[in-house]
Image 1 (cartoon, rainbow, N blue to C red):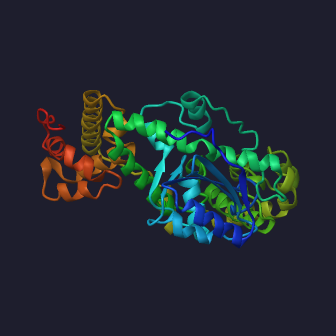
Image 2 (image 1 turned 180 degrees about the vertical axis):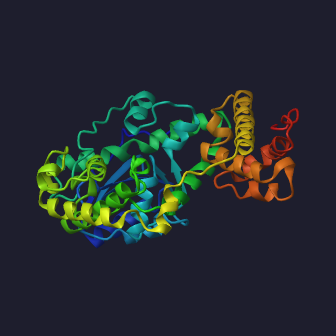
Image 3 (image 1 turned 180 degrees about the horizontal axis):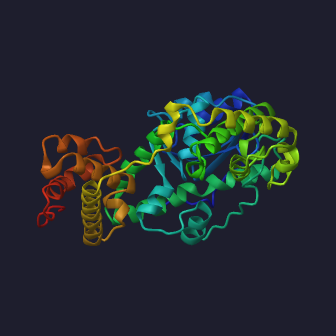
Length: 404
């Protein structure tokens, strides 16, 4: 069991030579705890600002903080990749994406947030788990700090190391619980799925303005205006190197697209219409309103994004029936194995299974291949539940003891 009682001095790395030294030392360990910080709340595109590491060394835990603004993290690709030690992270999605973009992609990962979720924990945040499981308290008072600011103070360095200092001990603790419940394979499969989707997230091909909550309720002129307003905001955010929400919020853009203000006074009357960074953009917003009204609607190829997917009554009934069967199977198997339902079928797998069953009614040819392609399902679940999935498709209950 890993403890932090022998934690060593914190190693800073601001030069290529210091990075190479840490790569050499950490690369000899069986596991490396990894965390990163960025400045996404303050710039148009987030930048990797620091990388924090912890690894087992001799009789204790070595800690390092790499200043990834001062030096490249590319040398870590040698140990972060498939040939390096296991990397332990907590909620890896953001970290993996930034490291991938920075030339140090991750492989061989374990995510303690996945383990906690599959073990049935309700509070899966790092601070909550460390407190409840290890009795360790960490203060997240710098959670929204701009980590691009330099120099990094000693206090900030200690704070940064805090997110990895006890992560290996947490991995040990949750790993022991997972082994006792015999769910290590399912956790490993979900970690790999999460890593894959972090690097290649499902692409929402809809334009940015369509994805704004409330856009679908606008009339044709309103959505044409919103389309132009979002373009103004994106250009301004890029030029100022700030996140778009810091220029003007979605609620304000929706209000403009709904009210169609004709002058600065009418724009000023709307909440946030001329406040802060929106003020200098007043003329551009008013021009966007005029141009959107003239457009009359969005381009024809973008209108489809606003059309709801309509299913006939028969399709709705079939889908609900399949969803109910999958949910019932999931609950029953979770009770039988005394595990969380996510272990049996993660939510994303359950949704894809429904689609596969709908596409192959009655267990039509191709079902086995369709199930095998479900991302994150994994060989362990296919081996365990193949007969049960076929039974669901054949419109009968799972065969007795099929999940065994």
